[in-house]
Length: 391
Ligand code: NAD
Ligand code: MG
Image 1: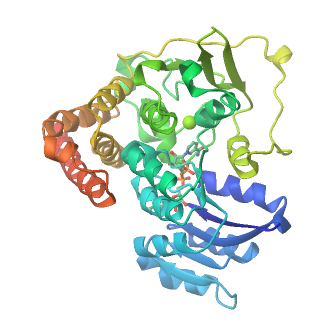
Image 2: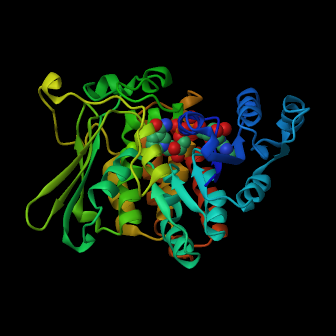
């Protein structure tokens, strides 16, 4: 049976790894929609090569470039945020959500509304609107399959298990580019240094988030929202080798660990073939050659992001949307060299402090409009705080 597949964020790191797996067995798939942003050449090349029905760029200013790039081929082209929603309405069996940032939320929700299985790389969807996402999936009988490596690992460790028997979920963190750097040195880090990851090859934004541990902070919230686990039962463990992706401890003391090479095609392929396992082109790990696995507790002083995520989980409501938006805005300001590396956590903390007293904002119902509103307010405030730090 040919499966109808759409890929949101097809031109990015996760999107390209997804396409790599599909290309290896392309007769098994019919490509419905591919979406991208500024990289029109890559979007058009893949849309033509994979015979996609539709290609969408998030940037309306690039629509004519996209049209020209696919001319002569039967591919519907469109652009903008609304076009992403329309693309998510096209019937599909499996949709990859791999846009980076809060922009990934609305198309994912739309796919769930159509009962489509959603392979979720976009962790921001769960951080900003976890309860909304899970409710839409339930209401429409749609399945969400985790693609973040740690969450795929937990998901796999839970196959056949009762979630009530879980005592602890431990997600691992490589520690990012600055794991062994002193606080003084981290204070001077440049965007280029932060965008270099020791183990994983990922998009620029998530790589910098790994260096600040904001990626792990988002993943703590993602774990809580996806698995419905109490935050006190979720731990982070630094594991520089990125071979153990997560561990699940059960009430009888047993611990199931998930190991694999640091290659996102594993988690993507697991979600693509679920509930089956199929051959995947990932490196096999050789523990005899590796010899030792290293673990350490995370350092909250150099990496305050985890503490902030715990505050967010305590506060609840739309504080996740505020946290994520403030983080995205602070990251924009860091990449643009308007603030220093450690200022990102300062900005996020200040925004949370300023807005968490606003109960009407925080406790508004989980709707796309309310999430977008909280996101917008937090972004504006984050840029203000950043400008003040800078001046
Ligand atoms: P990336 O930057 O490589 O690609 C992002 C994609 O999103 C591109 O196709 C880009 O065109 C598109 N995009 C960017 N801004 C957009 C907008 N405003 N509207 C619509 N589309 C937009 O990112 P990535 O590293 O592939 O990460 C994608 C998602 O997967 C993120 O949520 C990330 O946290 C998550 N994730 C990534 C990895 C990884 O290994 N790269 C691992 C786990 C989770
Ligand atoms: Mg991860």
